[in-house]
Image (cartoon, rainbow, N blue to C red; front, top):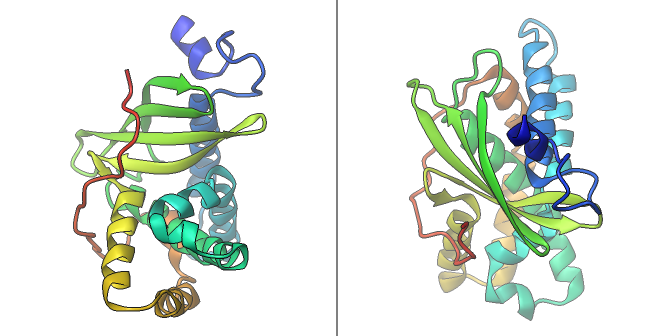
Length: 224
């Protein structure tokens, strides 16, 4: 019961927050799984697709994730450029987050997550979990969150030690070695224009295999 109280944010460690970092993820997966379980593949998937998109966009801190993914280039751009990058990367990240979970998880009846513990350091937090994988093993998935007002929002996720934002950062760095920032943004605009099936991938529980070459995740504070 004590562990459950902590997971649901009922403990006294963070009294100013409405929910704990763990409870943020519990709520997200509960709502996402509720959508998955009610999907009728013979009907139009636009409504559940949009529902999943809304949930993902709500739980992710796109600006913090954008700054991490773009690295030093982020600080060299004017606010207008940063705002545009956040808008574009939000869609790319939504698709990547969905794909990262769906390609690994057993989706029968929804994603099955075990919450192992959380660590809070000021306005940053990490939550260790496992999810039931397609081959029946428990796959480690770690989330890093930041506090925004009275809420916690996800800025990165690492599946089996591979950081999603670290992968994007490596990809952006490679592009920017050979092309201008404007060309990078143009490429992102093109990708965003073709992302319409991302939400449907989640609710149907399958997608084509797309493996991103693993890169070391960005340096961050380790959990205790």
